[in-house]
Amino acid sequence: MALRIAQKLGVFALSLIGASVLIFLITNALPGNVAHVLLGTDATPDAVAELEAQLGLDRPIALRYLEWISGIASGDFGTSPLSGDPVLALITPRVGVTAWLVALGICGSLIIALPLGMLAALKRRKWQGLAISAAAQFGMAIPVFWCGIIFALVFAVWLRVLPPNGYVPLTEDPAEWLRHLVLPVLTLALVQSAVLIRYVRSAFIEVLHEDYYRTARAIGWTPLRALLRHGVRNAAISLVTVVGLQLSSSLVGAIVVEQVYNLHGLGSLLLDKVAERDLVVVQGTVMLLVLAVLLINLLVDLSYQLIDPRQRGRQQ
Image 1 (cartoon, rainbow, N blue to C red):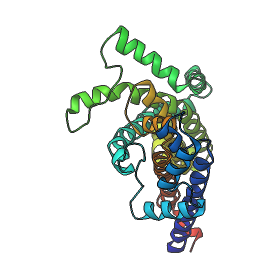
Image 2: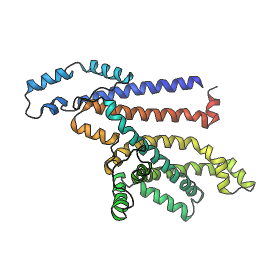
Image 3: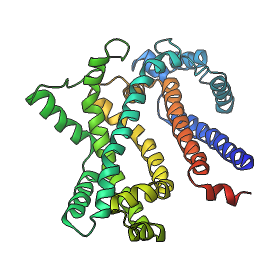
Image 4: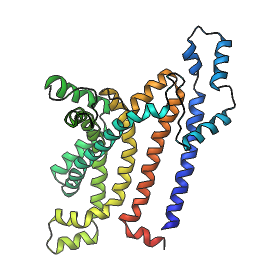
């Protein structure tokens, strides 16, 4: 068990280092730099070169990478050359917006997908199961931005029951915080649940063909009781994997949702700084998102040991 955890942590560390190298190389390979933004289009090459030297952009890329990654390791993500603010000071206020959106969105998708997926598995040969599968297939084809626009049009413009954009921190007004998050969370949850329903259905259909399920049915248990009692844990391995992948994709979906509803989260910060060529902030933001994805994958891997005792038995 300890060896397995050590191996997973080693893979996590190597993946994080590899990702940091790619992030730094790709952002620095983009045409133009912040010196051109600061000086404008009329700046002379000599002026640009002088500012690049002041910002340290003329130093070897390997040296700049080592300084950047060592700073991140100590909690220093650098300083924005445009605003002069520390990168962490720009990121920190926006982390909560994205974190709440992703966390509530994935919880909402599970609340929708688990019962519907189980029902689709139990009624797979009846109209209810076919209708749920068809709806999930349709939902997978809907772009998240289109879904967000429709919800904003219906609930904010026509019915005027929910705000169309903006964000209120939880500590300022819990009621307004919830009202402003309903539409973004619902948008993300519905799109993610369309994918989850199909995986939940497939996982529980496999359970329906197992001996323990047939035995439970033979002693008089209802299909739903047998599935809840014996199927949930046995289907959990595949479901945890899918939920982990959905959490990662939810971070990408959150960037789009933030733009639709004008939420000032990490997604809007990232897009704004890309447009401004503020690569120091871009690197720090992307690195934080990659760290979150890798941590999710690590927790998913480690959770297998708790969910399935057979995983522990194989390692002894």
